[in-house]
Length: 106
Image (spheres, rainbow, N blue to C red):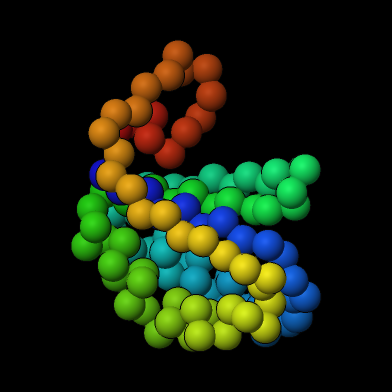
């Protein structure tokens, strides 16, 4: 299992940003092996992190190679003030079952 974490500083969004963002979300959710996502905002820094969970690197690579994702990556400087991506392999996931999480059934 893998995660892709996209952390970014918000810039100025327009209608094209929102449409492309929604398209990428639809594509991701339709890929076999997509497990779910979470989003976090750091109130101190204003940075936002979106964490996506994947069954395999191949599933994640399907999103990375999709034309909508490549379009967003090429245009990101129009809407963001900087970003960082971290791809990681999940070694373990556990909890007490008290909250819903994309990996609860892992």
